[in-house]
Length: 171
Image (cartoon, rainbow, N blue to C red; front, side, top):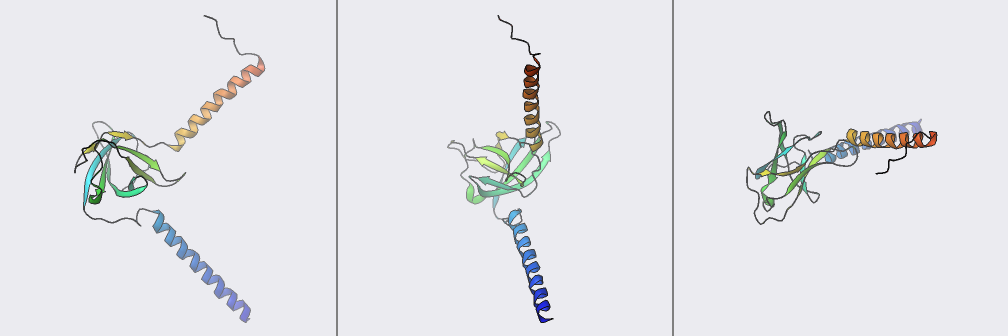
């Protein structure tokens, strides 16, 4: 009986440790872990597609978090997404010809905005707009292009095997 009770206690501790590990991973992999609101300045960027970009998503330069997404709104005139980036004041030396792109962390991870520094001697100021932007790549679009591309190749191979392909006309 004593052996069974120690087995139950060990199992309970193992489950408790598993929940603690899951809680730690959940806070470290979301934007809640690195969220600190200090002095910052705002940049704006327009994208045709932001995918699943969320508020407080990280803004990174060279993989290092330099800020977060403050807002994502649809511009009614241009039907573009206007994203406001809140950049930490410590990073006030970002050239004004830098580019912004929406990327995904891993295959199915959260999305973030990456800034690619330019070479201009002038730096961004509060309220400036990032002109060079690259929208989010959608996984569904990539899979569709791959399937359509292979579908055409398979069709052409089937035509050749059946002898129905037509020779190219000579000019």
